[in-house]
Length: 87
Image (tube, rainbow, N blue to C red; front, side, top):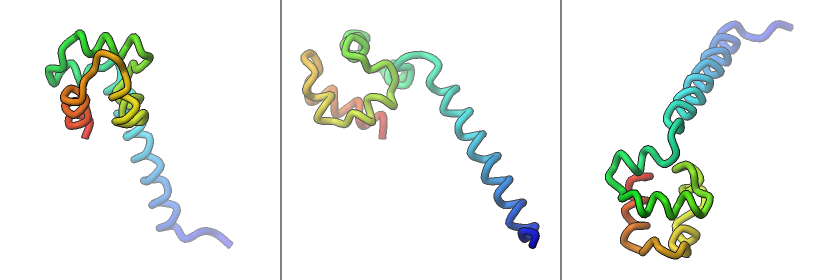
């Protein structure tokens, strides 16, 4: 029994959309912490994040607020700004 042609078309479109999203994520992560830099987070804080192994915004977001607050050199106010930018 052959699958419904409309199902095959929808599945192909979903696959193409996922590829486009994956490509966009790669493009936005070319430069370490570029989103935060573009939003005016001072370099000294970006350097602290880099020194602690957070090279990309996704890593900061995945780590969560508490883990970033625990880093020496980044206060609560800056963490709030960072997570406000990251959404």
